[in-house]
Amino acid sequence: MTENSEPITGINPIDVFSKRLDIMMTAMNVSTNELERRTGLKRNTIAHARSGKTFVRSDTMVTLVNGLGLSMAQFYGAADVKLSIEGQKFVALIENEPTEEGRKKMLARIMDLYNMTNKFLDDSNYE
Image 1 (cartoon, rainbow, N blue to C red):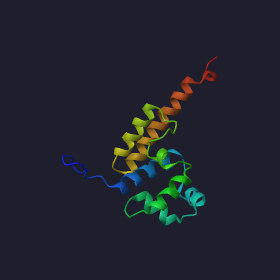
Image 2: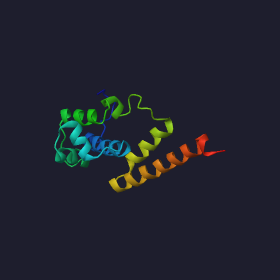
Image 3: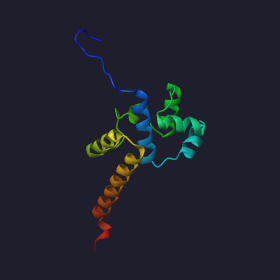
């Protein structure tokens, strides 16, 4: 840290990870049972990681992210995960929603819009 820089406060990396895990599992339609099968981790471990209420070891984080079929760079948005600029903005909006219920409602609305847009753009719907 440089002499004039301020420390970053108020950011809990576990909260960031758990919110992102919840969003990505919902967006990718991966259930806790499916992630358990893919990773070999126990259901409680996945639930605790998703809730953000307990410490998650870094190796467990990597295992969970890899279980989603993503790299850590993709999971945190530093690499291409085929999200448009609009999609990235939607993910950021969802991440800022404080409750799981609110995040799920926002994601459902976004998915509805996405599906309606695809239906509208699909030429086979027109004669």
